[in-house]
Length: 150
Image 1 (cartoon, one colour):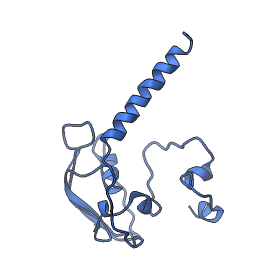
Image 2 (cartoon, helix red, strand yellow):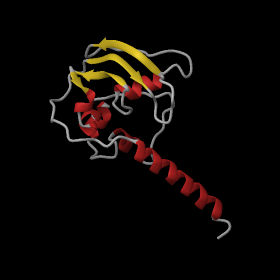
Image 3 (cartoon, helix red, strand yellow):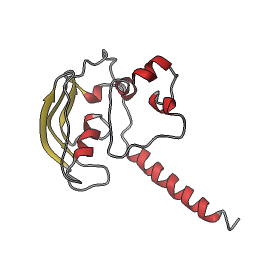
């Protein structure tokens, strides 16, 4: 029992952090069913305050990317690059402004519906336990052709 105490304590602390994260995460409301996105993206004067932060990491950011365009976001550590990516993906809600995909507010899309059309390469790549194919398929139904294309 004593040998398991550290493992129990770490598990409990991890659970509490995850529970707090899920509690702070906004609940997805009912949304309209939108057509598959073409891929035009626009950030219109977005400002973002990351969860658990008091100061904004982005203030008044605006730009547009047409479908098929490539963009590299570069800058020093803690400049807001990852925060911008999270806002553009709808992971973190913006405090002001709007992120649009094909002229629709990103918050109008169901995250599951939009996720299949988004590619994102974070600074630190982490895979979930499972095969690479399962990670690519996001642990859904495995389609070998789609996995190879990805």
